[in-house]
Length: 220
Length: 193
Image 1 (cartoon, chains in turn green, brown):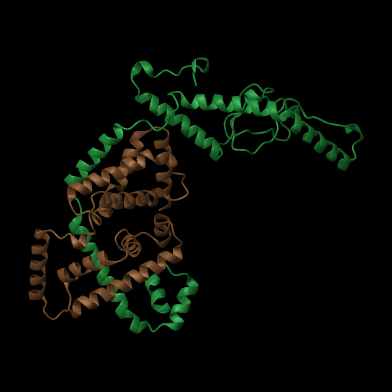
Image 2: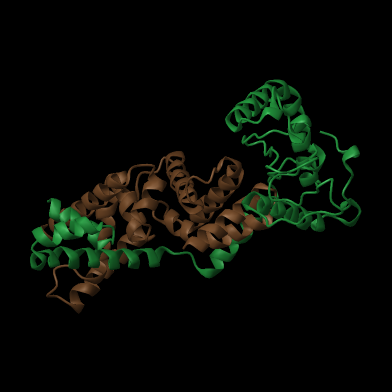
């Protein structure tokens, strides 16, 4: 029985290599051929039954139109307004600021302790006591939660919250003349895609409602 | 296959953002498969259209609940099977083996006669086998029937069937094997009758 079960899985191409070895060692292939042929007949007969029951191309066209019509009557899935992407970005920044406000004290303390530990390890007499980097002083700390909050990277100076976009997006460095283009990571690609989709969607709207409203007019 | 899965993921994301045209594409991609699946539960073609339409409307409404853990079409298959079963329950209709229309019976008798004349030496051939197989499938316990049909008619892998039926792959393998054994016994019994 076990060999026949393995044969059934082999017939479907679902055996592992180990199981194949086992089957070939143990099974009498010649006597198994009868089962194989029977399953093949069943498969062919089954396909014939399916073919008889299939909808015609005309019926499929009708079905498609009916589904389209039904979906058109359904409420829009996304709840966000037409300027959804900008609104989400704005919300992210608001969330970031509120998180920093609530987290800066304990995280600052942690950063201070970490800096102390580093200074002790490096035996650097200049760094007695808490040390804050410019990034920590401005409240930008590492956080890998799903809020998309990205902390400062080593060596980054004068990074402000307003200039810190989710990872992968164009970032501005206050100390340089213009934006630094970065290669987009997966999250960045997703966000760019979201922006493009939103743009596409807005293009479908009637002419007088296409314009993006600035954040000051966004209502929740 | 991977590119198709990625394409589905992107389309689903677009639908979640409110792009109904992306859902139209998903309908085009899968309506044939879903309609074929529904025909295994529902015979009347008008009802097949109704149930298939309902499947896609349900999928659209539930799109925000689709987390992407499974592939889109296995998720869609699950909705289709549940919708078809609910439809049959709602109509209080028993499985097709007890609901043979008069026209179908005449057709099947004619088919049997034709096949006997064409190849009298075969125990079961052509149309006979189809009729016998149909009855044997309908006699199967549901979990065996669903697993076997998803494999034989839809060509789904064991992994995919496991996703649709929400069971381990080993269970799928076992159900398919038991389904085949059961059909073999049914056919042997019908041959001997």
